[in-house]
Amino acid sequence: MNPDTATLQPDACYLALQARDARFDGRFFIGVTSTGIYCRPVCKVRMPRRENCRFFGHAAQAESAGFRPCLRCRPELAPHSIVWSIQDASYILAHQAARLLDEPEAWGDASPSVELLAAKLGVSDRHVRRIFEAQFGVSPVQYLQTRRLLTAKQLLADTDLPITQVALVSGYSSVRRFNAAFVEHYGLNPTRLRREGASRPAEGMAIRLGYRPPYDVQAMLGFFGKRAIHGIEFVDAPQGRMARTFSVEAAGQWHRGWIAAEFDEARHQLVLRVSDSLRGVLPLVIHRLRATLDLDADPHAINAVLHESFPQGDGLRVPGAMSGYELAVRAVLGQQITVAAARTLAQRMVDRFGEPVETPFAQLTRSFPEPAMLAAASGDALGQLGIVKQRQAAIVAIAQAVADKRLQLHGGADVQSTVEALKQLPGIGDWTAQYIAMRALRWPDAFPAGDVALHKALGVQGKPNPARAAQDASMAWKPWRSYAVIRAWASM
Figure 1: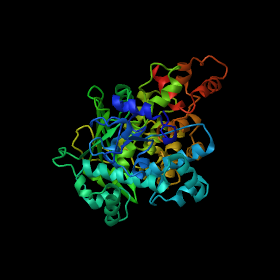
Figure 2: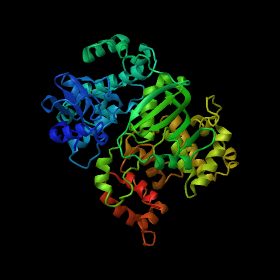
Figure 3: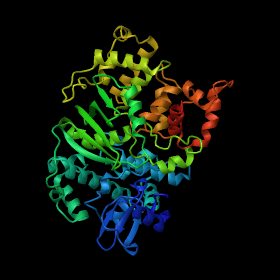
Figure 4: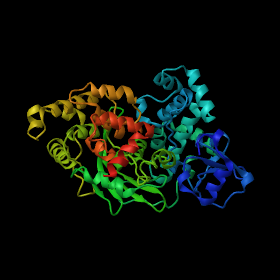
């Protein structure tokens, strides 16, 4: 089922609604003409009559048609609909535009606009508007407005952030504009969305995030658990929990704190707790965690391509990273050694260069070294940790490039140019660049063809050119080769 309204099958959508089928959560929304409300397919309200239902591929389309979001199923909790394709250029460009609008880090300190969006895509303003409206049925401005309002709605419902701060972190330049947009679109004042009696955790703020099943929680937490560094992260896979320290620079200011996440598998949700010190960057934290745990993946589309080759991997996701810079450094440490050996080197680095952090968790005491710290690290200091000279140079080069903002390692970065920039750094080859693209840039079609473990999993290690054999085999898995890699590794 394609998420675009023009190709939605209304009768199939209604059947999914009747079944409350979580696999379709976020892939379409239902506008009920008798109430003027739009809902998710998993909404628990009384089933509307078929003739009263209209179906939309995106929340922005439902709001553009005059529907208000349901206060019970809360459309802002739905996983985003991320579409990757090898179809025609206009289709790809429209979805790339939507992806950039969904990515807060793609804009730096600037506010998103159609002009900036067109410049990033290398086309004219008019062309962006035309292809976007043709694909999604709404303008880029309407799409962005809906994203901002749903972000604000979630913060109003789940946190006690002051209205002023909700407005600012949601992308509004003033409270007046925020209030006006809320009244215009939802017909009520923002303060009326505060959930009466909503419980606040003993520490931090709690937010719920949705995902589509199937989701192999134990595999995801097992992946992170094998790589966990004491002091900055811990994983309790049996209980479905993980936590870590986190720091991020936004608008020239560093924000430091902690996050904790616990899976609620019965509801297909993740409960995120965030320290009060990260209030000012809460939407960014939410976005990063969604990417880290791959909550927006569409198993239906991925499995349609990969299930035949990897029938046991339908619930596997691609593990991401809260910090692309940290992931890049750890990827360099892991070059040509085991996971356990790489973890040991990373542990020494954190113990030597990490800053102390106060948290309510005994397991979380330090932060990962910030870019400026490693950029200034001497070869002797890194060498004392057991890091060889080639990797020392790569780590310092990555840290300097990130500190100078010459290298962006997040989902809003251009994949091809970033991969090429990485490969220009000393000690960074194709394997490392592809691995970073897969986990930090969130590119679903990354493929580290030279990976030895991948050769073994695919049974090509004995061939004259195993990398070429692996690359040839991977063509059948486009555009989901990152997921194929995870499934191949898991098969071992």
